[in-house]
Length: 145
Image (cartoon, rainbow, N blue to C red; front, side, top):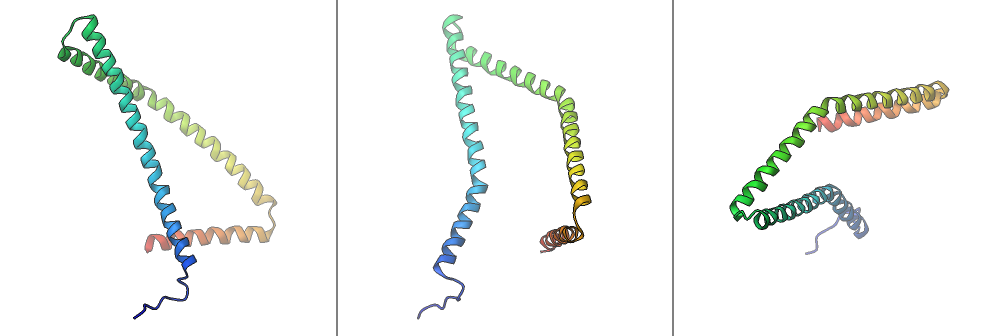
């Protein structure tokens, strides 16, 4: 017995739906994979530099492998802690700059929106208000559903 397909389930519709789902999965998955590959490359670079320093300490200062690894490990820790300290120290000024930049963009947008509202006729104003109300109703239904 053949299964009855709905009239809207045409092969084109199914292909488009599968393509859209695949595209959505790719859009979500691609940045994660890109970040993962960047972290892998950075890790390989770090390990390569650490190996070169270990071999340098081993051959130049005639240290054994364990001593060279300890020096590289604790040196890496000190560099990492220094970087974290500098980031922590510079974070308030960075945050203040971002807040100032955000406020300037907000003021520009406010001026443009006010100018648009002032020169728009009443039909464009009604359209804009209806679009805003529709988006708010859609967001409300999304939260409820």
